[in-house]
Amino acid sequence: MPTIQELQPLLTEPREDLAAEYKNWLDLTTNEHKAVLAKAAIALANHGGGYIILGFEDQGHQLAPIARPANVPEISQDIVNAAIHRFATPEFHCELYNVPHPATQVAHPVIVVPGNMTEPVMSRRDSPGVISQNRCYVRKPGPRSEEPQTVEEWRALLRRCVLAGREDMLEAIRSIVSGRVETMPLPPNARDELHTFCKAARARWSELAEELPANSPGLFTHGYYEMGFSLVGSQPAPTLVELQRRLEVARRIRLTGWPAFLSMATPEWAPYPHENFVEAWVGRPSARNRNFEDSAHTDFWRASRDGKLYTIRGYTEDSVADRVAPGSAIDVTLPVWRVGEGILFATRFAETFEDVEAIAVECRFTGLNNRYLTSLNHDRAVFDDRVSHTAEITLTGQATLVQLRDNLTEFMHQLMAPLYERFDFLALSVELVDTELGRLRNGRF
Image 1 (cartoon, rainbow, N blue to C red):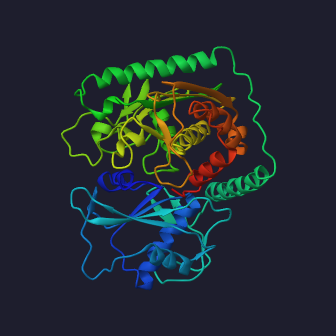
Image 2: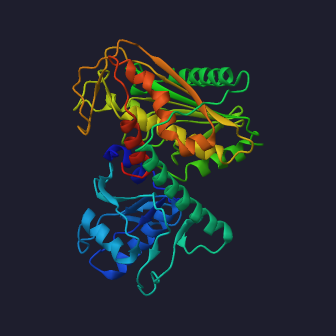
């Protein structure tokens, strides 16, 4: 599940895109407003999932939060789903979070629309001037929600449904047979090149972090994790402009409230060109008031034209002092979520390049010594007695795009098992990896 803190950038950095639609306040006691909500949800479900944020007004060139009118009743998750189910077929379940704006303290409903549909979602009834019966809606640049008109738009919709259906089939096969992914040999020096890229990117972050005060959470004093990816064999992007465009394509699917390689609109934290790279540093000092000020929300990331990616971030576990002391624990599921999200981003990024033979992965976890495994949400049976006596660990692997699409669970299990072994020989289960990846990919967070 996302935290309120992770969802707040949707309010403080409002930017409507293909995966996020902003609406004024809706009165879901009226059929017209139910139809408005349902049309947006149908289009986002067909797009691959996203967010609907209520309580924003388009004021020319910007979206501005406004207070809920007295005549608009509050809504619940059941009311939201009832409105969507009235108009959508097949039915799908959305989650509702009431997120307070840090400046106004107005609680805005944020509706998370899943993206795991195995068939196109259509409208089941009319609402004059809003939605028509037996129509299919998708997200289009603008952004707007309309019927697909071109072969390319239909092909993209059907491809998403086919891939979701294939994933369901593969999960059924995994419940019977558990296999291993046979990794292909990398070209000479490919792994060394990725390691060198990660080392240089880390040095760049260290250079930037020198301007931070000694007590800044952006220094990751309790430890951090970093991820590097290389698209082996890819043809380089011709320009940084094209590289930025490809990164934006990979961002169209957003799996968590604070995704890897995120792009923020605020100038201080937005992506920018540096030498021959695109990079962003959310930990950059600013005079602006921030609604997040912890190590888990001060990322640095970098991308190169030849298809290499790097990101560094502090642990979420060090930012929830009301549950565990900073530097003391690692949640049993979060490493799977974070690395899985990074690999899925790299896979979408690879689809914008030609001649990609494989994706090489290098992940490094630091600050592990004397941390224990726990479950922050208490949804896993962990008894806090498995402790790491290793300070850090580097995980490496590689797989083809086909392997990552069809056997991500097996690849992730092989990649992550050595990390869990450091916690008093814990054997990472395939079930944990499969379940958490399923929740991640299906928008159940």
